[in-house]
Length: 126
Image (cartoon, rainbow, N blue to C red; front, side):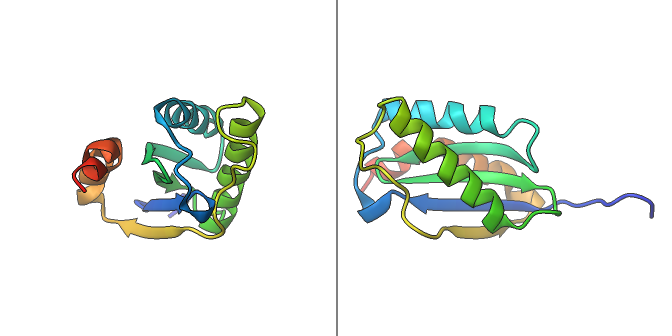
């Protein structure tokens, strides 16, 4: 086989430091837009991105040449800087260290996209 073929999908989740509730509706919209724009021409494709007051989810289709940890370090670093620079969040905003990453089977991709898109509804039930 002369080319690589993969169907790897990763659901990542990371939290605001101290689980502070800094991500209001405006911050979430700016963050989603930033992540979609920032992901262009990167080593991953964003399939869904959304969060709630104190955490954020992304469904990624990474290119296999870069580890997930490198991708997340870039996303978290650039997004927190951008949100602070634009004055969208408090000056002490930062992401908590670490993240969760789960593989998603191709047959479950649409279900995960729906779950991520509906974070507000999901969490407002609790």
